Length: 286
Ligand code: AMP
Image (cartoon, protein in one colour):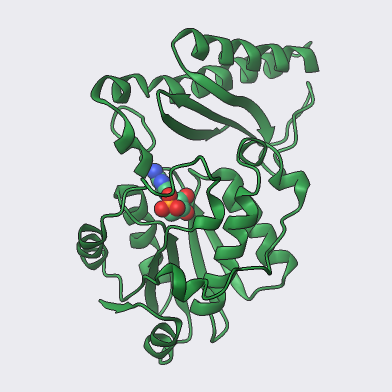
């Protein structure tokens, strides 16, 4: 595997290829990342990943400094799944001067859910992904692969690629979980052993909410108020178990808008909640 530390090195390594398959990450790679890489491998003529902890998408009180950085292990894992080129720039390389030009995503998509609780988050994400895309896909077409784990993120990035007519295909792949059902996440390593067991309550809450909404929709006579009541009850239940939920909600898959009481649109249940000092997110399509 070639490791590029600069944009120039990356472009040099990628020059012989015409269709990169790209998996951007913040490192601390786990089986979820590796599943994206394995799937991406046959989709291009060169498999590229990036490791960059992007300061722009962290609020001052968030975990930028403590975010796990495990570069040597990550390189071994990348090599194991056949990654050809790793782009691992320093902050000074990717942001040689303050990044004053930014990508502003549609507030209707980016200021809700994660964006409500992490203001500016999706501007940071879109800006770095646009920049990474322009480094990796300098030659034109390619495929970029993202995880469903970050549901709102993949939706916003798809829309960015569409609205800017970027010649890329975006692929979203299912969330990899532990056998018990916990979504793999770099932030799981902040959890203590008892918290790790307790963390299963988040996917369980999403499942419960999904079932209740499905049942309500099937039975008819379901009002908008009923949906809100089910969401509130699910949040209350998590609170009673010691969590601090930011949101637990049922939305349309297409644009994350709230659902009407009678709908046959594809839906997704999304949740974010803090357990101790760890903020976890998860979602489930229904
Ligand atoms: P991150 O390193 O957390 O920024 O994630 C990099 C990519 O891996 C993103 O597209 C994530 O959605 C994806 N990802 C993170 N966790 C998982 C998981 N458990 N299953 C599948 N994809 C994941």
